[in-house]
Image (cartoon, rainbow, N blue to C red; front, side, top):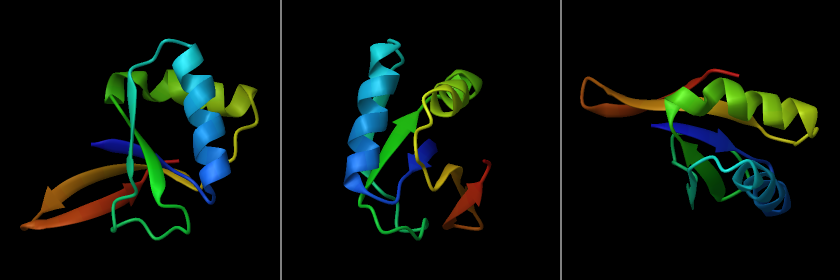
Length: 83
């Protein structure tokens, strides 16, 4: 699973609106507890859209706390910060 985490709900909603306007399939989810941020919302997306989403974030100066890969390792969920 790949997610974008945010420092505020405002940033999450603004980013969701901008990414959806580009017709990318995303889903707003509760921030996984493995990611330590102050906002309770994250955006889940498909790995194939990573570069496109990263470009949208940069071009629109969207504020995020990071893009993460969430996976299981030895039975535990792990959050690896990609960007």
